[in-house]
Structure formats: structure tokens, C-alpha cells
Image 1 (cartoon, rainbow, N blue to C red):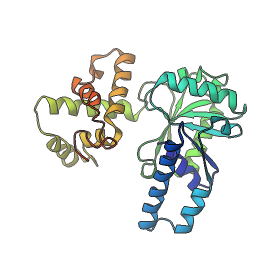
Image 2: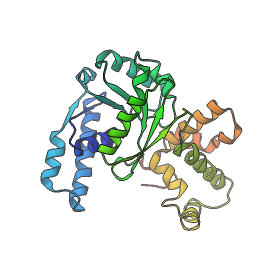
Image 3: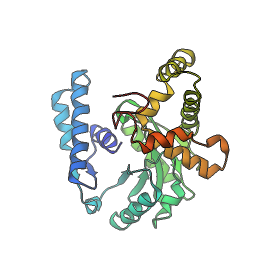
Length: 270
């Protein structure tokens, strides 16, 4: 996700710093961006010279202190509240007072993340969707103290990189899309485990019967089963409503390392 956001910003003419914990991870991000740009060249969407220009706008680093003079940070680390709060506290110390801090979280509280900083009015959620290059929505999420000016910065950034934004005015787990989408996937898992139909049959039924571009189980593989499961657990713990209970088969697959596309095995083999 971080590489996708960096690529979109660089394509829009912005100078980007791509930061990760390890050099190998940063290099993986750059390779992902280069592969995406090669695919765009192959499809005739950009020219080879455009690829070089985009890459020239991206500076890769493992040093968080390099973000000392940026206007906007888009965080896309693991979906773990403790990790995000620690990172935002560090960013609050490093970045100048005018910097807007955004989180790409798909389910966690923006208010709680912002509370780790001294600039709660300048923290918002900017939830992108995967893959960033071919999805056109960004959910802009208000925390308790997020200002209108901060939301407007999010709107402007989304527009500059060619995305459409919707504002989520009241913080709630999953925001709009995942609040509806993740329980839909979970229900498909229930149907599969109960023996209602096989994986391919469930996906085919939803594509041909409901007009979905992809089935719920192949979508789960694309998103990552570990991510879907963690989001369902956030819903279940936050709402205390049994309708958000993830099927136990989810946790079994995650324990086995069956994360979907990124691990090579999920509901399908890759």
C-alpha cells in the first residue's frame, strides 16, 4: 500500500520520501513501483521517459528523521494500534508543526492514533484501496478533533493523484466500505465452511448473480486473510455485537500462514 501511494503521488508530480524499517523492504517497495510502471508502459498508459521521471521523484530511506520537512505523511504500516501510536508520536516530534499526519488504517480509531500526538486537529484517516493504481476511492476519516482544514488537505491530495474522496464524518470501525464489505466476506466463509457450496461456486454465484467484479473469497485472498480477520476482530471487540464474530476457520487459516495471494495460498493457490 505504501508503495502504491508513493507511486501515485510521484506520478502527480510530487516529491516523495518512501520510508520503511529495513533496506530490503524499501528496495521491495521500489521494485513494486518499477514493476507497476513497466506494466503501464506495456499497456500504453505512459512512456518509458515517464517511468524515469516518476522514479526520480522518489527518495528511499530507512531513516524516519528524513521526514523532517514534509507537508504530508501517509502512514501505511501494519494494522496494529500500538505500532501506529508509537510511529505517530515519533512523527509528531520529527515533523514541523504544519505537517498533516494521515493514516491508511482500514479499521482502527483515528482519534486514538491522533491522541499520541500534540496536533490532533492535523491528523486524519486517508484510507486507500488495493491496488492503489487501479482503485479510485479514498475515504477521508475525521477523528474527534480533525479540523476542516485538515480534511481539505486530504481532499486536495486525493484530487491531485486522480482519486475521488468521500468524507466519513463520524469515526466508526471500518468506516464505510469495510463496514459493509468485511462482514460480507465473513458470511461467505460461513457459507463455505457449512458446506453450502465450494469456493469457486460461491465466487461465481456472487459475480454472475449479484454483478460483483470478483467473488468474496477471491477478494479475501487479494486483501489478505490476516488483514480481513484482524478487521473483523476490531469490529467484534468494538461493537460487542455477535453479527461481527469472525468464523473460527479464519483464525485457523491465518495460524497456518494461509494469507492469500501474498503467501501463495488462501482459498485458492497462487
